[in-house]
Image (cartoon, rainbow, N blue to C red; front, side, top):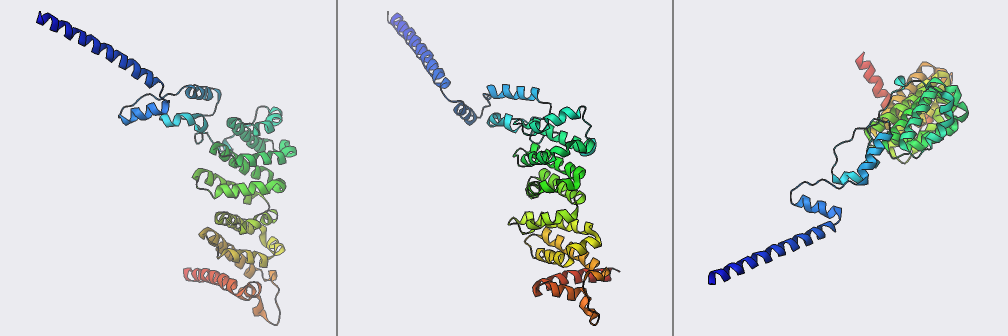
Length: 352
């Protein structure tokens, strides 16, 4: 009898424990379903396990986005934290940047021109990049066709230069270079905002954007007349940002020799020397090196063609480079200029 009663009590206890476990499991599952997704992920990671992150509509949107757009994208491996930003960030550095010589002509120029401004103003960054590349194609193959809207196009290119998305920004920089190449002095009235943005982009830390901007600035100094360009550059030599001053000094230095002797005479060699002297004491080495190169160029021009400077016949020494600098510069500036040019001359003598 005792054994039977003991057996019945044990059996009842087991049934009770099983029921309690089922109830606890249901409650735990219900509580788990009410936990936000971020808390689930943190709980899982704290246990050292890996769970499939909740992707939801973000993944569906990403797949739809990739199907709709023809730009070549390569998606890096993602973790749960990156899913939400996928649609915004994918493709920033994966867009194919086409060099000018590899661009093909447009099949329908008239249609492209009609939709050009709308494409440049689009809120879809892929459409903006396509429109920018069409600007490049028209500049290369049909530059006369865009002359009437060139000012409006440049304003929208400047807008793309300000775009925080690197793909749009770099494509706009490449577009700027092609515009300089094609339109030369025609862009001078619209140059100021584009010039500022290119100087800013060439001064930033993002290397592939910086290098593209520097190439665009080289194209500008190669294709825009120095007589028109130098006055545009001059205000930026006093910019509060030392990097912008440095990039401007380099552009100024590249542009002056393109004036030629007559152009330097017309512009004023004394004015150019004063500008170069002011950059010798600048904060960054890039500015100082550009100033040194420019002063050596001006010294060569001055000494080879003495008619650039007024000379007094009874005092031939007044026409020397040293006296000319001392007559046009403050004592400290003249001393700095002469030190730079004399050291260079001594180096040439020793080298020969």
